[in-house]
Length: 158
Image (cartoon, rainbow, N blue to C red; front, top):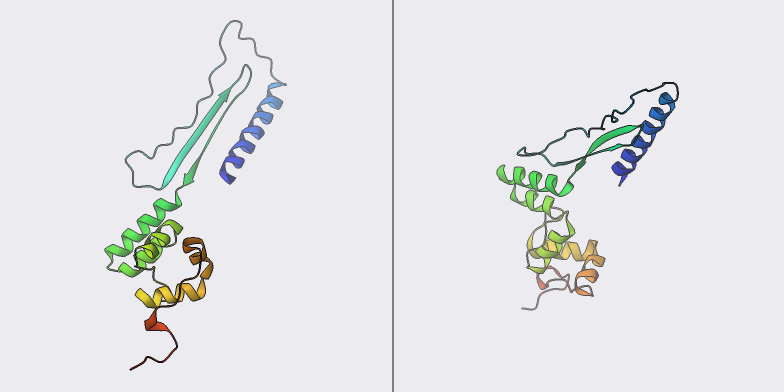
């Protein structure tokens, strides 16, 4: 949203400058059409980038304005980071990067393979998530689940 606001502000400022400078100039085209505003060419086709280009142009009778920007796709960056970590044999770290997305976190928890936290994996990670972020479980299950029997503070019966 911030980038769109900057784009709109930039287009408005450019239009004001163009109108202000056009007041000092007399144009006598007599029957010729006004040149069209051309949007800047930005392409991400067949390149390994996580940017989405956006450009626009507006042309009126006296003024033509164009501009452009690039949006960064955070999910694309996350996937590339996870792939790079996985390629370096850092599988737990790669899963941890993907778990920053709530959808992945919920899917991992629902499948019985909780996301790593503080270097913990498996049931120990699940219990750490319950202790540190109980509201995530309320959202997911409607209540906070009990800690696993392996990690309770009670002494085991023999």
